[in-house]
Length: 197
Image 1 (spheres, rainbow, N blue to C red):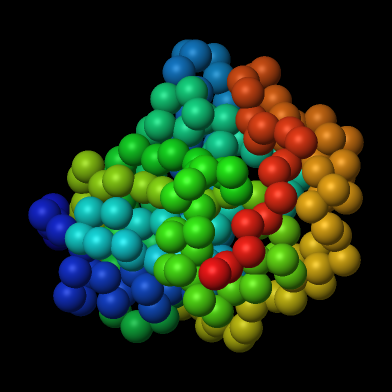
Image 2 (cartoon, rainbow, N blue to C red):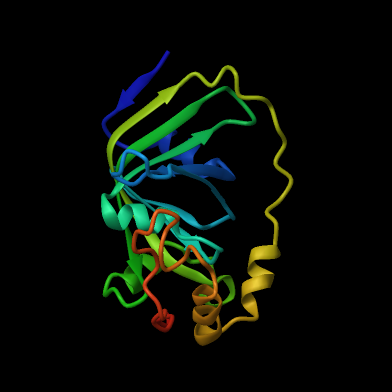
C-alpha cells in the first residue's frame, strides 16, 4: 500500500506540483502545546527546489503558528492528496525554516516563483522544507472533488498594503508576533520587500 521514496522526482514530483492544495502540520515541543494544521494553495506558490527540498510562499494572515513552530524546533509535515484521478496521498516529513525578507537567500529563492508578484500578495516569508522521509499511501478514502479555480481574495486584500501598512496590520493581530502558546512568531516590524533584480 505505502511506499517510501529516496527523492522527489519523476511521477512523485509531478503529482506534488499538480495539486492545487496541500496541508502543513507543525507543533511546539511542549506536550500541551497547540498542534497546527493549515491548508495552502494558490497557483505558483509551491516549488520543488531539488530532489530533497521544497519551498512555499507564506502569505499574510492573522496568525503565524507555522513560523513560530519552525523557529522553535523545525519539525514539519507537508501532505498532498488526490481529489481527482487515481487515489494517492503523499507526505513529506522533514525540517523547515522560515526565510524572511532580510535574509540574503530571499532574492534567489524568489526566482523559483516567477509568476508571483511579491508586492501584490503580502508574502511575509518563504518556508524552505528539507525532506527527511517521503512516503505515499493509497488515499482510497479521499473523496472526489473538483477544483474550479483559486480564490483571488488574498491577492486583492493585500494588494492595497505596502510594507509599512502590512507591518502595522500584523502588529494588531494577537497571534502573529507570538504564537497561541507564546512562542516567537513573525519578527516585526517587517523588513522591506526586496526588489527582484
